[in-house]
Length: 138
Image: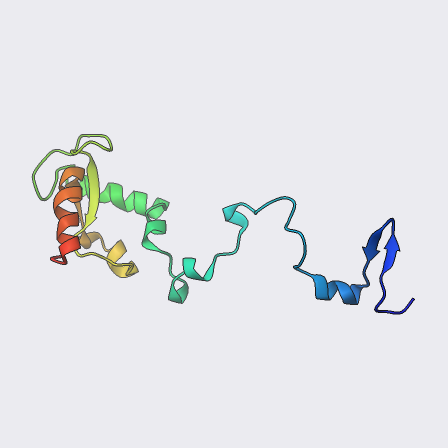
C-alpha cells in the first residue's frame, strides 16, 4: 500500500501521522460540546488593546466590593446629590449606588480613584446621572 492510500480497519480509514496533520481541526465537532466559558480562550474582541479588563469585569471583583463599601461608609450611606438616606435594597430607588463623578470610560486610573467616587441613590443615578451622561453634559 502506498503512502497516499488509506488503510481500512472495520470500514474506518486509518490515517498516518503525516496525514493526520492535514486533517487536524476538521471534520466533526467536539462531541462534548462547547467548553465552559472559564476554559475558553478569550476572543480578540473581548479583550481591549493593552490587555486591560473591561470595566464591567472590574465590578465583579473583590477589590471593587471593598472600595464600594469604603465609599458608602465614608459618605455615611447618604446620597451626595439629594441627601436621601441609602437604606433600600436593590432595586428600590433609595438603594445605594457608588457612582463615578467623572465617567471613567474604561480608564482604570479613573475607575479605581476613590476621590472620583460618590454614594448616590439608585433613583438619582438611574434618572438624573444617566440622563446627563447620555446628553454628554458630564
